[in-house]
Image (cartoon, rainbow, N blue to C red; front, side, top):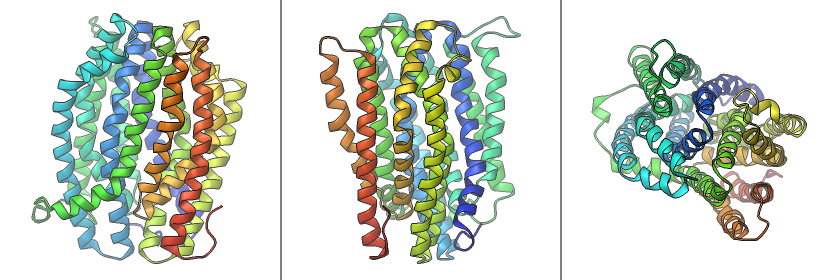
Length: 450
């Protein structure tokens, strides 16, 4: 356990964010490695895997419920120096994770096929998406238990073990991807099925490694059978805090699904270009996301300890750091967005779509960093509903106009990207306004973030 209630806020954020950023980059390499080899299978394969991969965000909605609820409650318990409560919350979170694992397996194998059929640009894209998802589903189901364990560790201020294990799983995926997708060394390429299988096998290895760490090395939060009996009261507390944050990923799944749907008439190349661009943008965001994801533990412990001034300082430092990072990334994407795309494909039509997407979307990178920081503080305060309300506004400002634009004469892909920039900027302003109100209610009338 690491005490975050004393010392420099910026130092705490950096010390947590650096290994977390490495871990997140490592985790993203799962998809970038798959992207590299799948892109060589053609536009239909890339478009199908991208559309199917969007279901990842649907599953992330539920893992985020566990993640946010567990981090906040464990951090509050640690701030109160209440180890018993921290362990009770951890064991109940693992039990809830096991239930969600079963639900994901059943739901994906029975319902996901219809989703792919709705979004696919053509028959080849639909076939590739279904095939990939059949083999990728175990990876999705295996995300829940390690999420609960990693969240409990993060609530205690520990992030390095998770980062090391994530690195291990990516190395496994990097080795398996060319073997299973392209048939290196075996002469039996599996194509998109190999991409899904490689991720599933690597994720399974990571689950085993993290469980070994908890059993052998972790001392503060531990598996305890006496605390494992389902407690609906604790599940309710985890869900109450985590559900709004999870619903944000559900909305992200919806936004991306709408984009795949409105651009399907532009063909598989357009969907492939958008899929690649969105995956690369998620990777670009990782340094700023690491700062924002470190904030809940830092601010949460200080909130639990009643140190409200340090909670406000955590927000200020988080915004400054994330905005500086995002500004640099914006300038790079304005100058040479092709740099990010070229290593993955030589198909000029896909590169053109992805590069234009990154150049336009980079205009809202700083605003996105502000949104991440606000979301982290809402988690720390134990009330993530304002963050959900902020994200939900994009149903009105983005989804409805995007569908309307797609029906107009002269509709172009860039119209969707510019619409997204405008709506994210509005969301950032709204998020800061909501956080100001939450600070006044939870922390008193001292200077609120501005």
